[in-house]
Image (cartoon, rainbow, N blue to C red; front, side, top):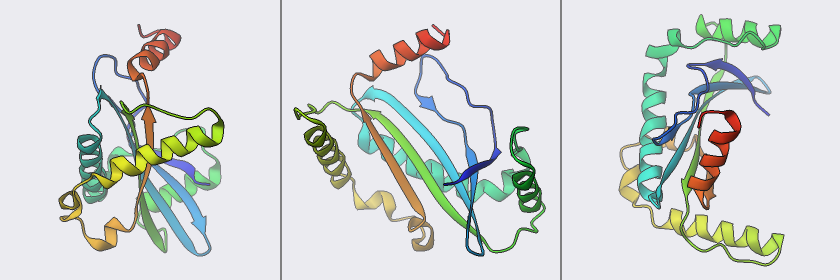
Amino acid sequence: MAAPLLRKQRITTSVGHERYGADAIHFKKDGDKNIIILGESKCYKSKYKFNAAFKTSLESIINSFNTFSEELQLYTYDDFIETELENIAKKYKANTLPDVHFELVCLIAYNETKVLTGNNEKDIKQSISSIIEERCSSLEDSCFNTIDDKVIDRINYVIFPIWDMDKLLAEFQTLVGSK
């Protein structure tokens, strides 16, 4: 489990266009390693554009990683974090935190158009897994060619196919009062 450490911007929901989540930094201690997890979430409501969404997301997380040290002054810690984490955040920003290791996480939600099958939980999960595998197998190798091997091994994807995203977003906007 990784705790939130620093945030670049407030978490917001933007109505009427593709959704972009807040850049965030999480922290996890693993033995002597101080693991900094740089994460982004992207939500693409356009009718099936998985390949474009994946490529854009990959480019975005790589850009964030490459510009992270230049933008570090833009990051702040939230006032709700524990004192121990606040001290870690201060040490990290002062470049005095030892044994730092980076992991990159991209959460991608996209509007899926394939038919979801299954009559029970096990079959539905298998259908979702098969759809994600099929979408990922259609990615071109070229989208990974410019990424350093040392970095690509640190990228973790969490992929959320969503059916009827327009309906889900409309319900969400109604519930939070932005519509």
